[in-house]
Amino acid sequence: MKLKEKLQTLPKKPGVYLHKDKDGTVIYVGKAINLFNRVNSYFKGAHDYKTTKLVSNITDFDYIVTKSEKEALILEYNLIKQYDPKYNIVFKDDKTYPYILISDNKEPYVSVLRINKKTKYKGKLYGPFPDVGAARNMVELINNIYPTRKCKTLKKELCLYYHLNQCKGYCVKDIDQKENDEIKDKITNILNGDIKDVVNDLKNKMNIAVEQLDYEKAATYRDLIQDLKETNLKQDVQKNIKESFDVFNYYVEDGYIAITGLFIKKGRLLSSEKFIDYLVGDPENFVSSYIYQFYEINEKPKTLYLPKELLVYFNDVYNCKSVSRGYKYQLLNQAKTNSIELINQNKKIITNKESYFSQLEDEFRRIFNTDIKHIELFDNSHTGGQNTVGAMVVYKDFKPSKKDYRLFKLDDSANDIQSMKEMLYRRYFRVLKDDLERCDLLIVDGGKTQIDAAKEILDSLNIDIRICGLGKDEHHNTSYLMNSDYEIIDINKNSNLFFFLTNMQDEVHRFAITYHKKLRMKAVYKSILDDIPGLGTKTRTKLLRKYKSIANIKKQSLEELKTVLNDKVAQELYNKIQEENNA
Image (cartoon, rainbow, N blue to C red; front, side, top):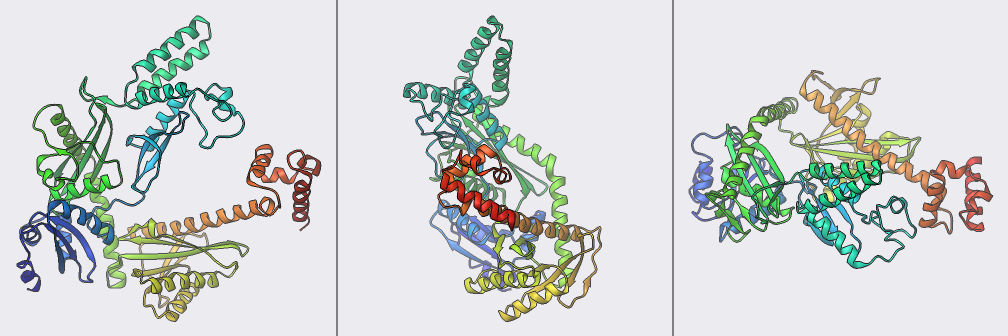
């Protein structure tokens, strides 16, 4: 009754609403042109699967009135980033798209760059590309066609690329700037989809090579022409039209929503973006939120074409338009057709995935008699007590939350229990100190002794968190789950839950061992070279370039080392090697 009464107090104004569960956790953030109508609609009539599930968990809500739909759109985005609600689409911070950058260096230099709002670069971007492989293929092709600068940092000597005629020797030669600019212009033409001139140029070179009976070189030019045509996947949108714009459209069916974006640069379809998931709320809110989040981590469109029902959300945000005829209307329909196809191909996969997570949710609720949403799992690694490290992996709603993963450099010890205590103390002291979100379940990699270690640390910090141990058999495979009363929890080894626990244990072990190997390799490298007075970065590079590995450096005589190093540094390094060999 309290919720029903509160619903009647909602204003008929634009704003943002926050749905909460029984624990007061924000589980969904939405925007509305009319808050009263939009929020009340959740509690009337039938809904699709995901919205029904959301409504079943709503026990309260808050709202914020805004002056306009634009303010509501921006506020919704900021609140989603703040609360990371369970039922919202949330673009991850590390989700970026590949672009090709022509840098502002005086030399022609192209590279693949993933960008987000924080990325700094100098030059001109082309993209986004459909995947990083397509972008790298294009860069490789450009580098094969033109004598571009290949090195990110210029060296002080000519390299192999110069001798293969794939670089003009920018590191040591003074190249005429006009010549550099001409190469940049030709690269720009290729990235804009204009390959006619470069294809003609390559054909002329191929014919000359044939006349000179240099068939190997002719074959190289032939292959470059073919690769250029195949890699240049951009399609003509409309002949004689050189506009740049983006198009987004969507389709809804059986509780699923698919969204497709098409990116047109200089009149050519450069790439696309596709997304599919269960629909939560109404389609217009869902799609407008998705598009706004997409452009928060990608280059803003010069013009954005949308279905007319979405325009109201983007007034004064982007240069948005809708059309009802012409080739741009055809592109809107093409984006919708792609969305229909996306649903037809993927809805069964999504249904199975959702069923998997629902089963996990039910199984954890059965075992612990409460909802488990946030799990933290710990493991440590060392070699003979050296380079001891710890790792924590985090799962939220049964999905890895990699931004919350943590690594710990621990005091060197062969005592796994002591290492676990140190790691847990550091983690949960920080949780207390910074008032961080507490997990619902702490899992240690091991049985009774590791559980006792976790209990001791949590008791000392006066923190109440459920504890379990994930044990292994003699073959080092996941074997059982033990609760804090040392009881083995009955789990079918063919179940999704056992599969999930095994993956978790493998993940934390992988995370820990990768960090341990990194420190171990760093220690090996440091023990030989980093402690030698006068042996700087450039000289170390010379040594490794000549002898290929640390192992080979150790085999060299003092006289041989003096061919690369001055006498004093060579003697210091030689003495260090002998000390290590005699240890």
